[in-house]
Image (cartoon, rainbow, N blue to C red):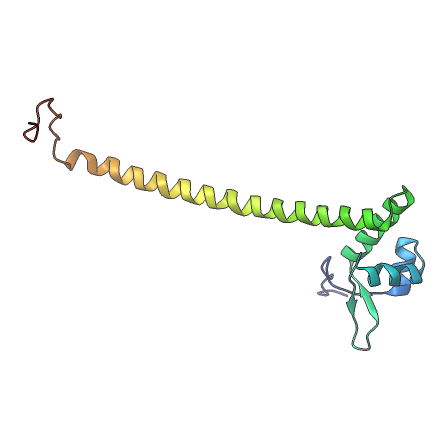
Length: 134
């Protein structure tokens, strides 16, 4: 249908049976991963789990890591570290933008000072003899 928007990556739309089919995992495994906090699907009005595309990607990663021999606690740590890295990368982008804004403001201020400089009174060079020396 024309005009219908595709849901974002974090919009919970997939029921557990579809999520299980998309990830190749058993629905009970998905419930276990939810219970231990590896993935946190949304909930429908009746309490049923609804998985987003992001959740499906997380589940696929969990399946890959566990099939490589990493235990669930190791998987949890890897996911936590990935979340920390993503948060730090986002903060880095924010800080770089702030630095760019501050540099632009500094350049504007320096340009204004340069324009005013010819109007500033001349300063006498400091002599080696001061009237306050004894």
